[in-house]
Amino acid sequence: MQTIEQAKNEAGQKAWTKRPLIISGPCSAETEEQVVQTAQRLAATGKVDMLRAGIWKPRTKPGMFEGIGVKGLPWLLQAKKLTGIPTTVEVATGKQVQDALHFDVDVLWIGARTTVNPFSVQEVADALRGVDVPVLIKNPINPDLELWSGAVERVARSGIKQIGLIHRGFSSYGNTEYRNAPMWHLAIEMKRRNPELLLINDPSHICGRRDILMDVAQKAIDLDFDGLMIESHIDPDNAWSDAKQQVTPEKLAEMLGEIKWRHESAEEIEFITALEKLREQINHLDDELIQLLGQRMKIADKIGEYKKNNNVTILQTSRWNQILERAFAKGDALGLSREFITKYFDAVHMESINHQNKIMNS
Image 1 (cartoon, rainbow, N blue to C red):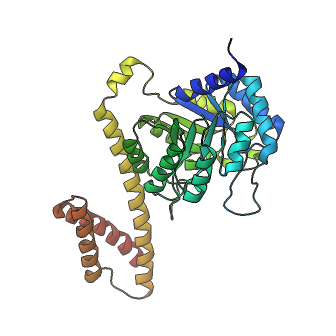
Image 2: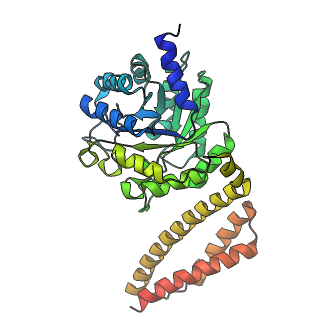
């Protein structure tokens, strides 16, 4: 006869292996009523495979809500008992690992602020020794694949067999469109290095606002991500943390229903060939290049204002030669021809001059 423990593990394993894997729940566990009601409304959609909730919330600045702590874990356990949905929480210390497992959390995840610190990752890894639980690892805050890879290696060496990745975007100075720039090429490279690992996209933390969640979620699915983690709350506007990026369970269901899932049938699997996937990757990299060029031109505008105020000519030949020589050196290392570098930077330079010319003569 199957034991309760076996049934619990089976439910968690079934969720872990589902594709696409959909994880949802509030950014923060606030009250028992809020956690349970969110779980019940998510369960009613029939579209969510795993319930998430922030128990401990590492915040950028002190004074912000930093999570309800251990008292929220029984709420999550109660929600699981009522709905049958397996649970997942973020852990950042060995003690948090122990507390989460004590309350039968099915899957643990390591957050971006922890991944960035090898000492913290090692503490979590040490606490996981001898434990059979799946672990998801978010990318570090800064765009550093070695830190992300190092976290995976530390957790793997602790004996954890089921490891997945969460792409939640990266901090980028000057970034305005997203809360965390997706930098899709880094997630693609991480998947290339670790093709056997589950890769989940977190549109909530990439976007920081709900109006562009759908666009990012669709891009992730187009790039063959294995699932999505999207924050959901029964009253998003009054959430205690990250209110702008959360949606109601019903809105989540609507969004998931609108996404074009590329692998819903055998026919679609055949249609989306390797060439199609590579073209999608190029499309998203092109999007990032255009965004970066836009940021470059904004800086050129500021330079134009400075030149205008100080009666300096637009064209500075010595500076242009420096830019080209620097680009040639980098291009040589990356296998880009000097002819291409010259044409590309000539086009960028002319656009920059046009921007500055408008300012100088306005």
